Amino acid sequence: QVQLQQSGPGLVKPSQTLSLTCGISGDRVSSNSATWNWIRQSPSRGLEWLGRTFHRSKWYNDYAGSVKSRITINPDTSKNQFSLQLNSVTPEDTAVYYCARDSSGWVDYFDYWGQGTLVTVSS
Amino acid sequence: QSALTQPPSASGSPGQSVTISCTGSSRDVGGYIYVSWYQQHPGKAPKLMIYEVSNRPSGVPNRFSGSKSGNTASLTVSGLQAEDEADYYCSSYAGSNNVVFGGGTKLTVL
Image: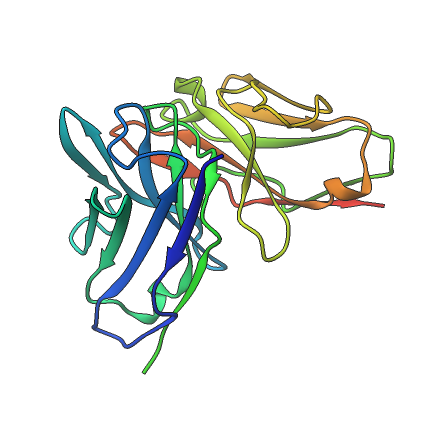
């Protein structure tokens, strides 16, 4: 059974960096079939896919155009986890952030989700 | 504004069937089989209910079914039960390694 456990601060000041981590059990971040994603949800923007990291002989990343200039998703094979960094945050980045696995190997469906982290951007 | 359009609400009595639509374009729903549906109860993470238009993951009751015609995908819940009351979201691959979601439909079991 795959489980994703999120950690990170729930409050970030404007212009600073949002950082979250997603620990994986029951699978490997270096899996050659799954991808590891970050998705956020807010009343104003709904569900929004932010990006993913995955391993296919080497590491790849894909990012949504809306955050591409500010986002980094990194794997950590030693801890079997992956992280999200979102720079220069504004109040519009306030949302519940989820990590999720896509086992299709494509940008298809998310079969396991983390518990969600409410991140508020406020001074 | 979400990329995929869903009705804000839907309702039905226990035992009835309800269908929720998800309308996109030829660049997403109409162009790929990669349409999925998620159920979300308050305060919980979304749960995958349907993938690739009409496939059910293990453990999802067969009361849930999906279909697609043109640029519109549909989720049908048959034999409504009280625990089906939740928000439902569709999503679709949208090209260029991107996925888009619908705005969500609140399903009420009367």
